Amino acid sequence: MTSIICGVAKIGGESNFGRLGLKTLLFYCLTGLLAVATGLFCVNAVQPGQVEEGVREQMLAGDTSGKSEKIAGAIKQADQGWQGLVEIFHRMVPPNVFKAAVEGQLLGLIFFSLLFGFFISRLPQKQRETQQSFWESLNSVILSVTNFIISFAPYGVFALVTPTLMKVGLDTLSIMGSFALTVILGLLVHSLIVLPLILRLLGRINFVDHYRAMAPALLTAFSTASSSATLPLTMDCVTKRAGVSKKIGSFTLPLGATMNMDGTALFECVVVVFLAQLFGIEMGWVTQATVVLMALLTSIGVAGIPSASLVAIIVILQAVGFPEDSIAIGVGIIYVVDRILDMMRTAVNVLGDSCAAVVIGKSEGEEGYYSSLRSQDSH
Image (cartoon, rainbow, N blue to C red):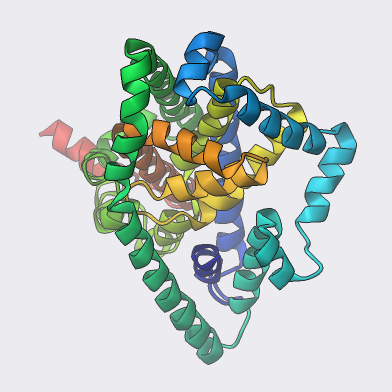
């Protein structure tokens, strides 16, 4: 909640949330939705979680029938055609936010956090700064606690996954490899097809020029797996190498580092559908629509630090009906291959932010992009 509140509140007052702010948010929604659609297409086409029943039973601690029945019941209850879709929007507006927090109604909490952050941005400057300072401080404390807990995750994952590896052996590695390749395929499609098309259609920009300009930031994002740590270099590449004005860059990039997580949203969708496949559960279109919505909303509040999206994935799995023990097994499996995927999706996140900056700048009438790169080539 605190991450989402902070992210939305950073939009600022009415002077910032004008034409420029609206364009930026619409661009982020467009690329995020396309990223999620790409992830869903890839995971449904490749189906990395479709395995033989014997392998599934061994991977899931030999109790796959009980776990699958629990998940199937919850998903079937949620997946009721248009009635289920209406129920999604009904759950977005909880009558009592405290009751929603106690009962774990996560969709309602996320929507409340979005509204709360938005109206913080509408307060007078002094009150807004006080609220932002409070929520950012609280968010920092929560992130510190989360990072402390996550620091022990490798030991827990080792204890959780090692027995499975001993039972199933190479089959487990094959499944993890198929999952990782599916995520990589989705990230490549988004970064090499979707974003270049957006640059060409909306900004009349050659994606090769843009990718060359952003190369230092993309390499740093890949190596650090942190969009927040990469932000200063991203700003430098966008303004000095791409030629975007500081006015546009200073508005779109910090906002994007908090709210625009294309790679993360894509990854979250692939993970949830993959785990459903692994448990032998078929997800209907309403449930997948819920996953899309949850991925877009939770990606707004994902901290720009390594492996932060695993927390959002737990939220989504809970929302679609996965039991706690199944979530633990699923996240343990994902964590084994998460580091390299985290590095790749962070680079895609940064790339999406930079594309927003140049497209928004073009729409504001800016010209002369990439002239510094072309002058270097001429010499």
